[in-house]
Length: 79
Picture 1 (cartoon, rainbow, N blue to C red):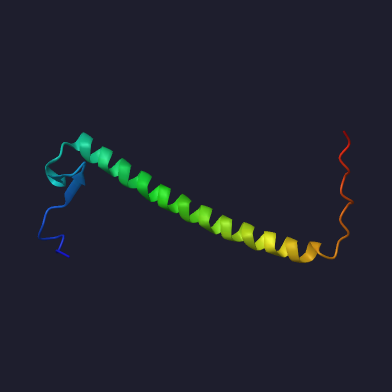
Picture 2: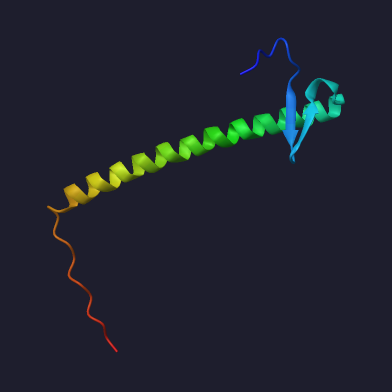
């Protein structure tokens, strides 16, 4: 990995490389917005994973504890 203090940051976008420092301020702001959006997406993806694990744990607990409860009889099919 190169030392960022001795090299300019590079933006790679659509297969092309750009000197980030030489971009107009408007484009730098768009790049920052994309970085924030990427970070938010990663955070929410991690949150979804945590929720899925928690839900799975709850389902396992429910399955274990509901075994002691009498289920309702199956409804008969009437034509």
